[in-house]
Length: 393
Image (cartoon, rainbow, N blue to C red):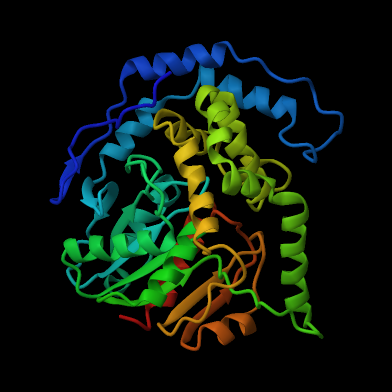
């Protein structure tokens, strides 16, 4: 099967062009045929997730995807939102741009990570842009810009190396300038958190503060007598590197080889993502405790239909090659804010953030939620952004 073309309507260019999603029916029919022809592996030899996604869970998700899931319903939901594309540094960038009815709203750019997408933010859009109808006041309002990272979703796939966090951050600054925002803030989780931190280090015109829901602050030299909070973070990170980072090493070293299997097999693509929804969410043993089956399949199907398994995986290769992967991201002088969710991959203590972010103006640790903060806990996520940026308005 040849690489999928850009789906939808709208053409990239230096100007901003309206965009809507329209997946050819032939692509959906092909997906259903492939799902019907799935060859599953033998059953795991353990009674838990320690070898990966259990066969029964994979079969259940496959059956739902094949017999009950409706992409067109999600497509219609997405097309109700104002979507656009524009070309920045040679790459077509897809983004949502939802303006508040409140003219003085604070412009905010939200960035997803892997294996996420703009889908993570869909349930927080209305409360952020129209707070009066969602338990807040007009002073809480945001204008939202929600782009798809290069190589993800309906953004273009880079055809040359070099699209690391630094380059993407510069593209985001260009986007905010192109949209006419002289003063704005940034937020992100996963790669989006790294991007928000790099943006804050670059200090482009107009950016006044940033918030992350994964504070990536980790000392190059570990404390000799760590506090309980520091030891917790050290242990979490060590556990992740020992038993939870094989996906990272594969995508950072051989994304192209991995991509052949994921681009050809929808169930392979699904399990590559579904396993992370189990491992990184605040659940009681199953991904469905934290996220609905439909929401997970919306995200998985977006990856499949845009054939972006390989291009999204290259994000790991790009940032490893460029030195954007490692310990803490370094000192940030711009005002920074952080929220720590309890099921994050590792939970940095505030003292580490204060050392690297001398202008830390907000910090909070919550009692529920995981790595996909906006996706899992939209109400808490909205509350955190309202509280964090109140001091910046």
